[in-house]
Amino acid sequence: MSLESTGYKSRRTFAIISHPDAGKTTLTEKLLLNSGAIHLAGEVKERGERRRTRSDWMEIEQKRGISITSSVMTFEHDGLTLNLLDTPGHADFSEDTYRTLTAVDSAIMVIDAAKGIEAQTRKLFEVCRLRDIPIITFVNKIDREARDTLEILDEIMETLALDTAPMMWPVGAGVDFNGLIDLEHGRFISTEGKPEAEAPGVEALAGRWADTQNQQIAASMEGLELANGSLPKFDQSAFKEGTLTPVYFGSALKSIGVRELLEAVCRFAPEPRTQPARPEPVDPAMAACTGFVFKVQANMDPNHRDRVAFVRVASGTLKRGMRLKNVRTGKDLKVANPMFFFARERELADEAVAGDVVGIPNHGTLSVGDTLTDGPDVTVTGIPNFAPELLRRVHLSDASKTKQLAKALNDLAEEGVVQVFKPTLGSGYYVGAVGPLQLEVLTSRAAAEYSVPIRIEPAQYVTARWVRVNDKAQFDKFAALHRLNIAEDRYGDPVFLAPSQWEIDRCAKDFPLLDFMATKDRGLAA
Image 1 (cartoon, rainbow, N blue to C red):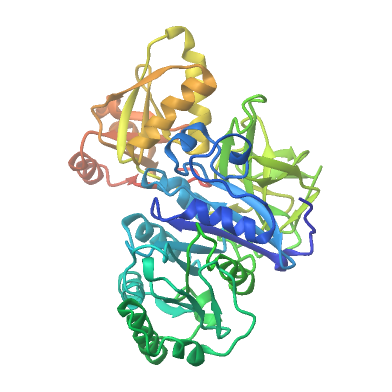
Image 2 (cartoon, rainbow, N blue to C red):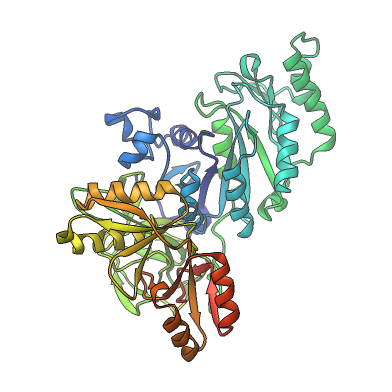
């Protein structure tokens, strides 16, 4: 893989979001396959050499057939450099997904043709909406049992308040699936995913099934006629504003409609965007090199016990060997071996421009939310921690491994696997998570990567709040009254471990000069 740095305008950085089992990881593979980046797509349960082509590489991911980490794949297609971020589909890892979405400029939303908009899809869409991220929709598994096409489009419009512009139209579905009509180019795409050479136009194609006796296909043609008269045509400005989505149909597993989706990303997805920051936003055209860490992954190569910070370049050009200042610590960092990624495979990056995602090996000096720059101090914002929905106590059976436990928890918290809170009184740790699968990953990785077997036990607390100290005297009074509930996060910021929401509300009323925060920006201190 050899990437040409032709300037940030040639970059397209996007994520794929979906509910679990909608086919996101399969689509990721087929996009890579259609771009020529790989030559063999693996199935979910495959192992060995064929597994190496896939983006899910962690052992627990292979066993469960789901994505937990956010993998990055950089490849070229049609003269553009594409950075594809494959996000976790499981709801328990929504915080990691949120942080990944801060690093993209557009997203592909994958919807199961039979199930429509599902809970996790909606949550992830709302995250995209908060950042005005343009969405391209891919309705997957159209070759299986599927809902009516107009019904799917109506659900997108009603549930997500998003205008739809169908770019393809399925001819039938399931066992009656006969192919796709490419509405943009007026050509037909077969059930093998191959477009016909001629492009007779949409009307002529629809006429092929004018006398069909197949009710499924007849309904498709009626729906197409209604759609032509009622749905908007694709509009680039509305798409970039996040108010309209072009909708593609197909089957990722059979590579139907995937090439057309890839072409849509190249043609429609926006260039790198301006990043929110303090004291002022970071424009990709700025000369100063600025980047921010949106993910940290340890032990991608267990043989080397490595730690890699994933950095989205926001402006300027990052060059191998240059020195960048970590604004949080005030210390300089030499970027000796920046890397481009293809899932677990990696290649040295001599230079990267705005929009690119690079990995920077480090030994715990970089954390999620850190901003790096060779210009004036600036802090990219909008990379949050959320108050955990589960709080549990960590039990260590072997007291001789206390130091190893501290390192494991610090490393995994740095990655965002869990949040870790250390009480100011007593010993031990509490961990916070969105869902139980995070806790399973914590125990699995602590044992496999750090040789620290741990047990997760119930805690007397239900959630946590970061405490912003606007008045030290009032905080000291609060801390004296709630000594057993005070902890620190891994940055040393004060945290209130709360036994109930009622207790949080009462403390907020009794101590009005303190802020009890449900979110904390990773780039800014509490």
